[in-house]
Length: 254
Image: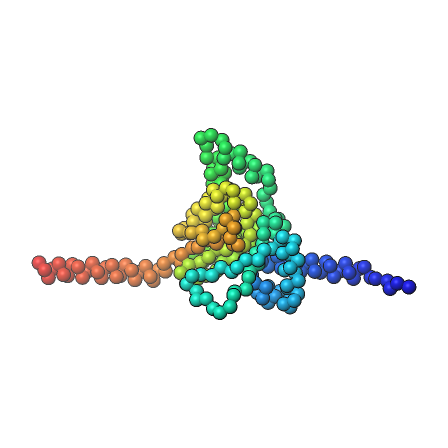
């Protein structure tokens, strides 16, 4: 007599594995490109376990493997660096995108209207909507870092999986997911208007270093540190001392 197989256990195992693969993909979405070792560490999986999930996600077209970005300023160590895994367009499409082909068709139609700037007008209107919805949260903050945190919090609620990274010379606002990446890849006006509204909300010059729409793993906006009050007072003092020295020298010469 054949042994009876409990299909319920098989189903539970499959569901658990599906959940783990979803978690792997979401971890990459929220953190940007990661190596197999990084993923195994973050998710407490064995090397063999994470490799099995990555192979299936690669086969399904959800992920792709790339050579890691290496700054020319960083000395190269021995050996070949481990590849990192990033989401493909198909992978990103599994995470609640708010665009569809109709949006692309509509913008393409608008771009073909003679003697008009309808696409730019639409991009600016969308940016103003970001300012309207998230502006008060940013304005309530008293410091630059508080404003950036407020903007990041708002963007997270809008589905951008945003993190903030502080560096020695500034702050990087990293959007690990872009709900309109497919549309923005064809209409750069959307990214440009968004960058401009970030600058207005933060009251600071900002610079886009990377965008998902251009094929980068993360949309990265750089915001330089605001000069501290102490630094400003020091600069004013130095200028004042320099002016006094010039006046003294002029008096000696005369």
